[in-house]
Each structure stands twice: as structure tokens, then as C-alpha cells.
Length: 554
View 1: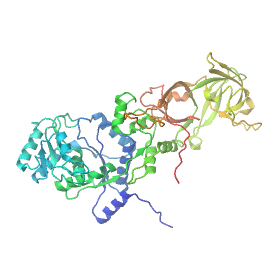
View 2: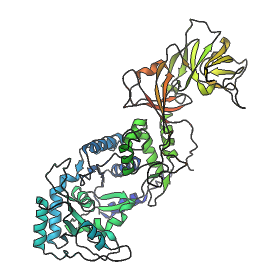
View 3: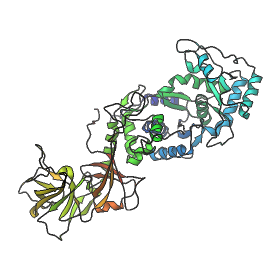
View 4: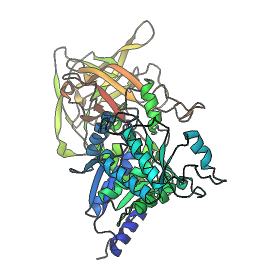
């Protein structure tokens, strides 16, 4: 029997090499979010990649908050990130850490660099630092404070810590090379003065480490072996390596970069999402039109669908864009075998069967999911008056319209053949009632073969239906105009959120719990909203429509 060939990505090949050489004994990865907003679908790729590698190699996965910028961080974001990582199934057990847990050790690492003559306190203003830095085509020039003595730098840095200086007045910089072709190596800032209250350490600190200094130290403190990040950090890798080497770690972590996840016609940048939230254009970070993880969860996406999506996207070294249709394909694939299929009428019109007995009610047996017989059946009631979709009746239909119109016969799904005999409209010409007759010989399951009809429509019994609101969601972005306008604002699709009131559905749906998911026949997949639903009155969000043009590449 031939051995199955397993295709590995470039990160797995690197890890395999490190394990084979003995450089790595146990694989340790981490997901290091900054708690300055909610996570989005791009972060899901990073979470699942890091967690998946640790699990694959029998290693360890850490969740660590890079909370070094208290001006923009909040406990709300910390909790939302914890919830999202758990929901995705990335198990970090008791290994949840914070950069702020290491502030004392980071300070000592900075002191070590000063003592080695590799860091100095600089009094240049932010504008002057930018000016001295140079450009991509011209080298920078040394700060006039670069040659301060070790003793003076230690004294000034301690006074920075004690709060003697105003914000922006002094920084601690690495002493590397102002002529380096890599701008990140031109004496980067390691610490700045910032008198802000921190969500974790309170007012204990008034100086905070910069990300490029803190991040490699955090990895090293935790024994991370492979620090996996996105491509924009590739130019920062020399500084990452310089920090851990200069501080003196014997077994430094290894930074590896992979391509970010870019989705077409989707807003993922935190600052853009934050602006949408602040401007009231969306209903918070979990608005179902967004692709934050909490928004996808609220809309009705499942962890399994997102994991499948990340697997299909794969891991590469080159940036590329993925069509959002692929994400929708994954949730359809996940729910088609899981979700019960129920009748719901979103835009209802009354249908009256004129020759059906007045006080008669029947029970029709329907399958819960035709994809899986083991999901069983249920009974739904049928009587003289029903609700049907407005689009399932036309007074003057076009060619190849096989649903109801005057004189035409269709099958009511799981019930009888009915033939339209008349209709009523209101003063504006809108159809209010459709009248039909039924053929009692044509009951579904009776084996009737006398004639065929081309159209089948669904229905809900008017006598005992459940009535509620339904939100129909589309892509937030107006695809014809592009994601952003000339001022950098999101081109919002005006039809991205449509509220349909007084929708009719099977009586059992009144007992739906928040988060439960269904396929509404011929409509799409829907989820009971976790924010607006109340006991006895669930409100439903459309997760995705039934039809898609997306096809998996061969």
C-alpha cells in the first residue's frame, strides 16, 4: 500500500528543519493581539495557523495581549478577544499572558542595553527624530544625544520612569546604525513617556515600551520558538533579532512571516471598523454586516466554517486577495447537513383555498433535512388559509414563470396541488389575497400520478403561524463603487441591512433559542439573533443566501 503524500507549507518545512537539527525541542507558538479593537476574519487565520501548528507538533500555544499602548486599549477588547479565541476552538488552557506582566523585566532589559552602550536617552522632539531619520534614498544622521555616557543615560531613564518628564520630551532609543538601508534599524525608539492609565497595571507606569522592543522580548520570555506574523513585519525582523541577541537570550525565537488574508469588498482594518462604529454607521463591533469574529458569530457563522475557510485559503509567502464568496461557500457547506429546513414567509401574501373545508386542519409530515434522513421528520398544520411569498404570485407573469398566476396550477410543498382562480389588490395595486382551489387527490405522498406541475412553492399555515422580524444582510460595501471613496470613507451598500417585519413562519419557531440556525426553504440560512431576540420572540438574521456562483478550484 502506497504511503499518502502530505503536502506541507513553507512554515512546516522550517519547523521540520529546526526539529531535525535539534535547534527546537518543543514547538511553542503564540497569538499576540493588541487589545485596541475586536478581532476580524484576518486574525482568525493567524489564530488558527499558530494554534494548528502547536497542536500538529505536540507543542504549546499561548494567547498573549500586546498591551503596551494604554491610550487605545480597553478591557472590553480584552474580553472580546478571549471570547473569540475560545469560540474558534484555539485552546490556550491557562496560558493567557499580557505584555504588561513583563513590564519590570522589559525595563531591566532596557537597562541592560544602556549598560552595554546599545541604548541612549534622546531629547529630540518627534518632528526632529523624523527629520534626523533620513529617507529611503538618503541616510539619517546621529542624534546630538547619541554619545551620552552610560551613567547619564541610566540616570535619565530612571527619571523617565519616575515621571519627571512630560510626554514626548524624552525617549529611549536603540543605538544601531543611522545609515542602515533598513529604516527600522536607524536608532529606533524603545521607550516613550506616556502618562496614561493602563487597564492592567493602573498608574504604576508612565513609560511604555514600543511594540518593536516589547514583542521580541515577550516571545523570548515565554520561550516561543517560532514567532509567526504577517508580511508587513518582514522589514522589522532585523530589529527583532537585534533585540533578543543584544539583551542576551541564549535560545532566541525565530520570526517567520506569511501573507495576510485579504478579502475582496470587505472592511477589515481596525481603524476603518472603529470609524464605522463611532459614526453610528454600524450597530457596534458585532454588527452582522462586518467581518469581525464577533459579528460573524452573531450573524450565524460557525467555527467549523471559518476553520474550513482558513484551510482553503492556505499559507503562502505572497499577498493575494480571496473572494468573500469563498467564506460564504464554507458556511453553506457546513450548515447544509446540520440545519433543520423550515418554512418561513418573509414577504407574506394571504392564500385562501376556496373549496377546502372551513374547520378542517390536517397534519403534513415533512423532513427536517433532506440531506440527512437521520434528522427525522416533524408535523406541520395545514388549513384553508395560508401565507405564501409575494414573489410566488404574479398577475401578468413573464415567460418561464412557473409559480402562481391566474389559471396556473402549482404544488404547495408537502401538501396539495392548487390552481389560482382569483386575487384581490389594495388601492395601490398591491396584491393582498390570492384565491385558489385544491385537488384533494394530489396530497403529497399519496402516489398521485395523474398530471404534473412545473412549480412548487412553500407556505405557512395562517391559523397558527409565528410572526416575527427578519434582517436580510448583504455585503456592507457597495461593490460597484469599491471599498473606499476618495476621502477614505467606506462606500456603504444601502441595501446591506433590510428589516422585514411581520414575517410568518412555522409555529414551533417561537421557541427558538438565540444562536440557533435554520435553513428557511428557498430563502437561505438564518440564525436567531443573540442581541435582539427575547424569550418567545426570536429575531432572525440571514447568514447567507442559498445560491452562489463560487466553485472550488480543481
